[in-house]
Image (cartoon, rainbow, N blue to C red; front, top):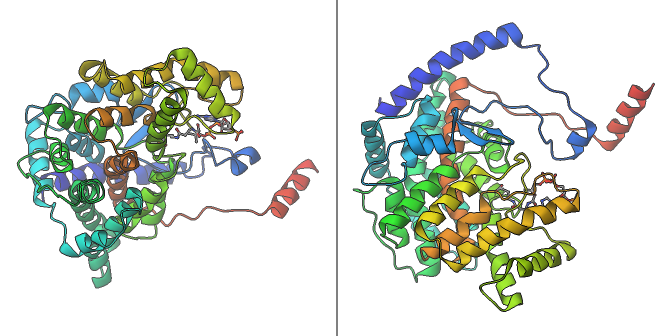
Length: 437
Ligand code: CMX
């Protein structure tokens, strides 16, 4: 059994026992109550699933196994001359609860590089797709085509016991994560660089190799990718992409089928596609105002115009957060160090200065602050990744780490099929009538 697999086994063995005892002693305790407005309003805030890899606080933001983003930036190993920690370290942390050593991260990086090969039939399927097919759709199709490689599906077919599900889910998870940069870079070079593909360099770490295959070998871009892949990896279980993967996985679909579903959820404009929308919106503003250096007053007027047309301001607001997203702030710090004079980056910062007050004044927006998607596009564009409709693919590659690590936990815990209860309006009326009497 490999290093991380055995560390994960030791980690979940103890937690599974603890969870069994907790359930036995407290299974009847009521943890939450559901209001009718929550039933209708997207189930906001209802506690209804276990999720080990991260937890989201409305003010502080995301914590991965108890560590917030600044702590992760300080504690996770930096190797290969990186200034930013490697996301491989975060994946180790999500599975084991332990900050890994440099040697463990080095090993994991090599392990992923050794698993990265993509079968030829996947390339053929991608090549058959017209470039007008959105890159997120291509990513989803690419992941589904890779499903031929699922070890979990094969073993399940042969007949395996429930207690061994986690082992094969772990194998699918790491194989899939290892292959995602190659898959995403293939889609990028096919759509935007005339299919001039760049071979992987297995001596590089996962993110640096991804940067390399996209076509930018600068050390700073490699660091941006390490940061980007770390901060987008997980956002607890209730967000649409995470919950989709968890739900599909609960039917014992394998990691490939489950992740493709999550990618489809991420492709919506209220979720991950917002990073594309932000950059499109900024470019529309530049064209409308006729300047790529708009004043804050001009930006204010454009925001008001957007709202008056019944549109949302992309990159702002959140279903859980009630403060500026620390993932936005981490990218702002990166921008200050590497591209403080870039015009687009400065527009992003000026938008940040004016939008929250305007949204607050609407009186209905619960969180007027920027989320992760408000910043990422401007940094990518600075390093030459200018194709806005590719941005959510990068989000998807990172998000795979968190949701697939959790899928390993799901199978390790033996969590059952998800099957909540829905009710009709007639039943709702009946309930209200009975409660009133
Ligand atoms: N611009 C304009 N109006 C906004 C807004 C924004 N950025 N954010 C929220 N609102 C509006 C909502 O549309 C809603 O209006 P109606 O009552 O007229 O329908 C009202 O404010 C209340 O919404 P909310 O409770 O504050 O927000 P929700 O939890 O319903 O939705 C989110 C959260 C993210 C979908 C929403 O803030 C939004 O649409 N933001 C812009 C899109 C975006 O950036 N999404 C990315 C989120 C992060 C991610 O998943 O990647």
